[in-house]
Image (cartoon, rainbow, N blue to C red; front, side, top):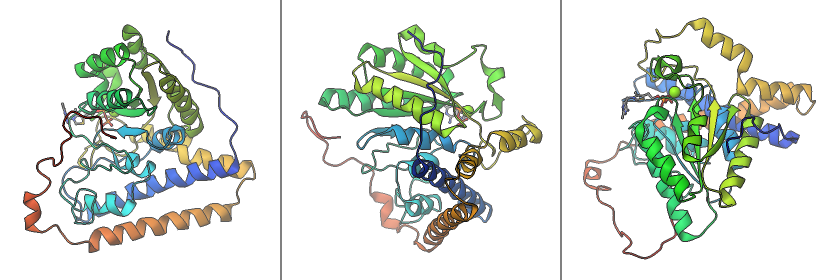
Length: 340
Ligand SMILES: Cc1ncc(C[n+]2csc(CCOP(=O)(O)OP(=O)(O)O)c2C)c(N)n1
Ligand SMILES: [Mg+2]
């Protein structure tokens, strides 16, 4: 039933390593810029940064194929960028502008892209978990071989609806990868204070779901585990659970007093486990890239982010008439199978 050890690291080419480096750096620099714009008052409301967790989405997207779906919580900017959504559209949504993915009406937690099969962005803890199973149900019903990645946190993992979903997903062999992003905290509550279970993935055994724990600071380990999970789902064997051990460097949201952990704890993670730095070291020590090559990548990313920030300031605020649009769904399919 349950498998304990994460898959061995795969061989990886220099080009692949550079791609992961670039993709993780894009998320980090985007989030740093979002933090700055928030500080300047250009972003309002809730804003949850993903800094430190980049290897999770980049590794899993490397295991995904065209047409696979993803759904996540409010800590969602990294997921959007990793699946190829435009940084300009994401940043402009954060600043509440017309050029944003929800025309400036959704903000940080409420963005979607049908084109990239990204189904949000959900502010209610664990609400996306049954939605993820529903997306997978649709694919099973349509008879295609797509897989849905359903991301949620360690805090969400204690919610009842997760286990109702597990039961149905296994019963119906739904092609869904449940990704528990265990970053050790749910707001200010450490996992040690919220559960006595030694691990979250093992809870799947109660429903007959296989899974494993993965080092979420290692993009190659995440990719390898993701490939295994995806192969399981595509083979029609039902859901799979990945508990990805990760860490967020910033506060829960922009208004976090951070009294629940020490600065030293955060610094130690940054110094010893940083997912971007470790790929950087692999590139340098393996002679796959020189310091100059990496500087050029850094510059390229910086330009993309600056351009996104400029766009997010220049794009106008939505007009008042937008108050009355996008409220009700149009063209609801009536009883026939449609391509989702
Ligand atoms: C149903 C519900 N309860 C409480 C909250 C308030 N809340 C927002 S985030 C959060 C913590 C969730 O932590 P976790 O699932 O570990 O995700 P992380 O923030 O670490 O990514 C809580 C309690 C909420 N949004 N929804
Ligand atoms: Mg958490």
